[in-house]
Length: 227
Image 1: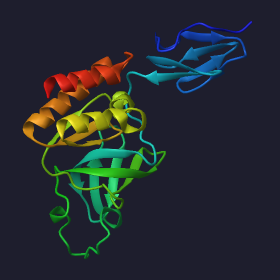
Image 2 (image 1 turned 135 degrees about the vertical axis):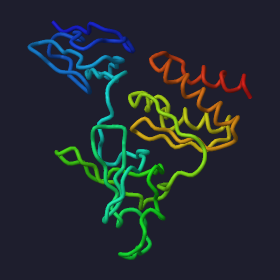
Image 3 (image 1 turned 90 degrees about the vertical axis):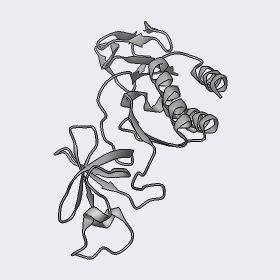
């Protein structure tokens, strides 16, 4: 006989039984052992038809091809820039992927992107040796200038963005800030000092309350009360 042992949006721990029987299927961050499905991580339970999924609440960022990230340049080589991503993975931005304009062999790469500068880039390759290749040759990818960069738990990024970008759009609307969210948990805020401060408070609020229901309405009230 099959049965679900948890409820929608329950917080579960690694190894906790979620369902028993063959009528249910393991989804993200779950596994089957004998006739039961268990959680792999600490996270938020989701029941989607017959599939059980867990949204992790903690854990490191795992790079994936297509992810937009924010990184900090820490070294310059003959062929490009080495970028810190906040992960154990080392990232490389090659000259050919940094800009569409022609770069001469003798050109000083530090004049294009200097050590200590932050960039917005997209992951185009992840190797088994934990190496990441980046590109900046797509719209919206650039060197970061001005504003402030904050770091959040990377597992909370989907909640900060919201469904179809609804949550981040709400924050932009009420703070008049330009906001770029990296999948690795780094976020760039650019606006007035007051707008940036309010945007950061709203994002910290989401990070802290990400497991709670009705978060969009609470954030809207939070922003309206302060603007």
